[in-house]
Image 1 (tube, rainbow, N blue to C red):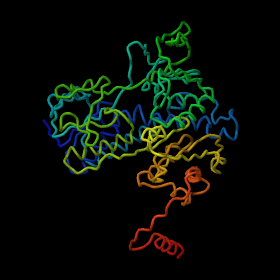
Image 2: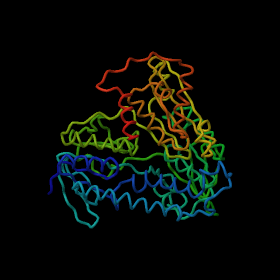
Image 3: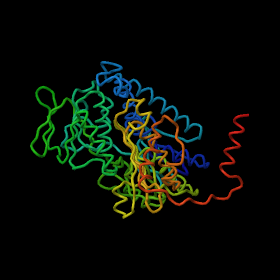
Image 4: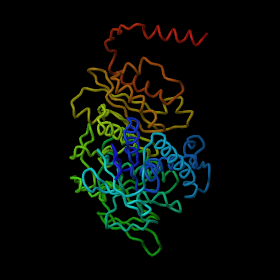
Length: 489
């Protein structure tokens, strides 16, 4: 039986980042992946495929150019499922190749197979070729991710009644689609297919959607969806799904309403892929959704040498945060010093349009009784927005009236997931409204919206006290002058 300093189960964002981090600290590492290729859900059925599908749909439909050329503008008139899959396969092959090279370069061993615990330090791996092997680790990191929640009363058939994993294997682009669940995954796919001119209806049992996002942003987003004829039904649950004689799907709602569509996507939640791990043998227990509870700073489970990271530990379930969780967990697992997880991280929803947010929402600021002011900019107020033909898009910032510090940044619109990092940096560096007012942004850019929103808040907040400059060996102005001189020579 082989022994390792760290055994990682799963090769998604958390698992691969943990494995590489431990290997760089010169520890022996084994990655166990049950899928056909390394990469986990993120590469094969989640993050990368959905974002690739989004980009393909926007490119082939000419979505971004319709502000100039009209709603009938198309780059390709008849878009097939094969058209959507072509770029996806190229992208996935590249992602897997990069990951395999990273494992090879850092001497991370990996094996294909399904793992389960024999005892807290030993796992048995049933390899894809039928061989069974046992491995032992000083520490174990569980990064097994999640899979779609599939309730027994939903008659999934893999063709017209599908989950989010099966969506990537469809053979035709449906003319109509009902999406059950208005969470991040459901909304992303709903808006992508709406951009493909599929008639989309979203059903959500709650009265609201995306409750962790600032309400003003969600309201603007909701308006944009309804404006392009997407149907949003809130406060109703699905009682029954069946196929009629013509092959269409029929959905009965809790209020007695019946709907029809060519395809149904059930995207109402995910569950941790922990049921096959034999957690009891390790002294662990998952919750009703298969998730593991961990220390939020170290990512240790109830068993001190067993860690968990990524989607299997629950919110925020992002590839970006999963990577950081895996890195921090690996450092703790091998006894290396580790920093605390970042307080503020960007959250990206790759819908059409994008939503991205970092920091506190206006609702959270109000609940904490913090005196605040907001600044808002519409993308159409920027010259770049006009150049791009944008008639929608909103950037909102929230500032403390007492300290003038930025408390949160929230964006809906084109490029939101890229633009948010400016606000994230200012937020984490404790910057104030004056940064946005006094600094120059490239022109014309969508980033200029930060200055517009900053001025919007500043106009109501007024000038704040000027801080005395910090004495250093060379002032920033002096350094910049030297740089300019050097550049001109």
